[in-house]
Image: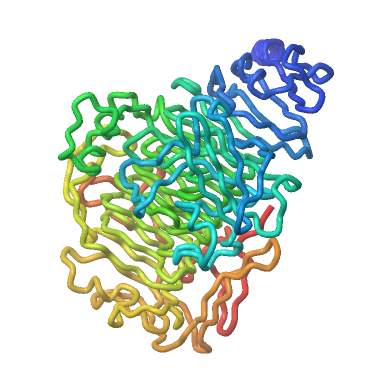
Length: 631
């Protein structure tokens, strides 16, 4: 024992001797300094150039206008940590302050910027284009203009800077604050309407960097980013077929921890967790085959990703937790294959796809392709286009204990996947809650304010041998192989939709093979499948279910009938769910262990015959339960 303790002590001392903490201060630092607390660097990049595994970079309060490119990665158990100093407000911005505005007619201001100002990335000259992107008949640029940290609305011409708001933006506040730009080989001109503000006296910034934190190569693993306010980078559209660059971009790497940050205000993406660098865009292909569509190119991506080392040993396994992410035009968090084996937890995500100036098949709070063995839990996601969108190869994925509400479209969309995947203990308060054209799903102990629906879109998509990336087969997607156990279908009256009474699960009564359904509760207009057992129906009773905010606290409010009681239920375990039909894989945890859904949304233990829905202890009448708390 004494020998073992001596070895542990020696290892600790060796680690301490070689690990360093570097300090950065924008106010008093100099990049010629040694990077000590008394002699700090001025830029984060200077520390990023020399930090190695086990080192810590601590940044003092201030505004850092940088794109940080880490030169080295950490190792498992020895990450390189980038952190804000304790209790300090540390801002990393992808923008620059712009003065010299000249007032024109109609309250329009103008500034002329030499193109040299932008270097090799002119965010106001680049035209966004990529797979699954719909420009809506105009050009879009990744650059943005901000007045006192608020983004102005990007318009397509000077003529559109004044007058009524367009349909996509008329519901948003301050939609009269707008900008547009023109560029040639020498200069970029920005025109803007700032309302009553004088842009030369207020804080006006423009996005000029494609990212705030992004390595320029692969192999930069085990990075921790903690405690920063990161904003205003000119991120571009991130399709699943091309490299995805957000304000924080993990690229094709492993083991990043992104925690306790405030991430906001970008044209497209807050955090990206994939994909590998590729020349797949048609403009860059040496022999472009224009007959190929986005779908066929993404099939090729799957096999290329495997060639590029897509496996658990090399890629993914990230943790994204305790962040506040908002005001992003495309996604808060996205990843194509690079998000596999990751944990996304305790984040608040809102105001995504906020301006609606473009469209495409990628806008969501969280948008993942191939979320293999990825866990999405304990998040509060609201006011997005789609709150969570899981696309292609949703296998081993768990969506548990989330509060999802106020989406413009749907809370959860699972697209062209074969499972197995688990959706459990979620509270979904939007008009529509679940949309899928996928099989192999298990929906257990959820509360749904709206209804579930399906789409008949069928595509050949791959599935894998369990917990890996070895392709086991390709098959068209279907929606028969799904399970619904112990859910509560609240189906409130104010849905403003008509589905011919097909709320709940009744629409699946004639599907072959049959879905699995047992122990659900149906309120108001919702109905079971005709072969369901152990269920209860409270016909015509409107629960008026809603999710409300009171300061930092978020509450579920739901009214239950006076004669409310529980349906016939059992605790759901892995073995109760069988196997997903095509992958022939069981419903288990990422490590292969079985799970038992024996705790409710709040962590309370469930009895042998648990309550349907996400919460134990609901009573007849009005229930008001705190379900999330802002930090």
